[in-house]
Length: 427
Image (cartoon, rainbow, N blue to C red; front, top):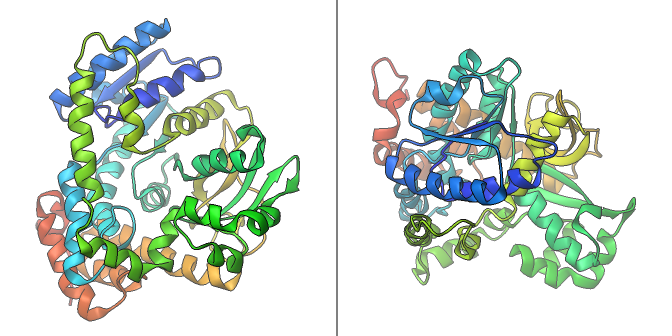
């Protein structure tokens, strides 16, 4: 298993998740790759001590050599962040100067991250096709997951996208129902970070109507959405839909300066975590890691890879090609839905169509995602401008045009396709 972005402070979570799945997913060698040798040393050192404490026979390798990481790999896990937290800080703050929400996966910030990330992930995938084992899986946990997975699948790679939003909701909703999380099945529909829970089933019985009737306000508090809106929709929106349903409220909060940006919070947390990781006596993930975000990441990632390896056919929420699952969307559109996972990949069953209030937003955001993929791959400013115009969180030409110039300039060091020879420019 090769982990690109192995120096991430998330990696100890992944180690724990793999240990829980060792019966279905015995890992002979775990290769952590990261361009930052200081981070890699700190994170890899803790990972090695955790493995030793677990009594694991997994060989841990740390490297900055792509070829070494990919040679003979069966799984390639992508959890990288091009430009690091410094680029994230720009994603979260620069859009505010143009009256747009600053967020790292949606809106113009997420768009900038997609431009930086898609070419890098595609290069890794191309290298993997030459060096990894035949039939190797690329598991993408890198945001924006929907756009990155769309690019990977459009280019013909054997890939599945993964987000922790569904498993987090499953865990939280199980507490409402007082049942084991594994007994809860969600009808989770939409695009990555643009989803709704349309059913919450236990033993085949849908408890969502009762949950909404009796606990709409509590559910709303959980996802940052008014309970009245949950009643109106008859579904539980992802917390990321707050950016679309409450744009003015979120923008006012961000412009107030009352709180640090999430990037600034994470920068401080990562400094503390890396210092802890360097302690040679630490041999388990510290409690502070819970504040880093990504709840249940390790569980979701390890479960997915274990099911792909063992072919157990259990249901998980993943990002895959639609292939008729949501009838109003094209077959090749990447959607986030429940699917049965086996050695051949993810197979989703047809679901009822989306109602108009969901469908319109999904279609618009999917149009944006496709344009973002083309812009990222081709370095095409015209496609990039169209993408911002299609994005519901931008959508205004007099904002989109100067905003695009600012985003590209701020990310110049990470966008050679836009600033190198022969790139396409807007007409």
